[in-house]
Amino acid sequence: MSKNIIKPFELLLEYEKRSVTHALGSTNEESELGDWSGIGFKIGEIYLVSQVDEVNEVVILPELVRIPGIDSWVLGLVNIRSNLIPAIDLRAYLTNEPSKLTKHSRMLVINQPGGQAGLVVDEVFGQRHFKQSESHDVEGDDDSRVYKYCDKFFSHDDVSWMVFEMGQLVQDSNFQNASIK
Image 1: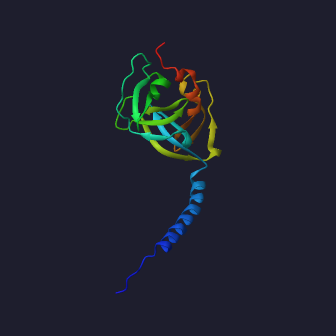
Image 2: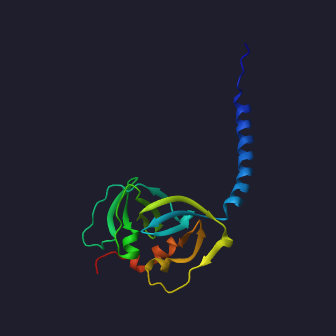
């Protein structure tokens, strides 16, 4: 019976070869998937997608600490890895209708001036890929606050994915000032 002796350096060279082969193959996969990627999520019946780099992470909603004297769309503070961040009910902020927290509810952790914020959404669908050529401009004068942060959308499988601009949201003075008026 012969023993195969594994030489560490040869093993590392084999891993490198596999890695390079995989990396070269992924560029073809990306072009098949599309040239625009985002994190898909839902509030109410509205499907939204934000650029991948605008969302730091997606977490299950941790325990909340309520804050008195603040708008109802701020659910409270949550502890994410020893950082206290505000948890915002995105549906309540945008539509004045509070979210119903379920087992599907998630929190999108985003950057904002002075730290981070957690946007509570009804459901997260993970990464979505679209072709830039399939984007459409949002038209109409719908007075819903949702459309204030959406300039375009992608239509895919009979679903309109509104492109939600997190940067516009966090720079909005109404979002930055959550005290009861």
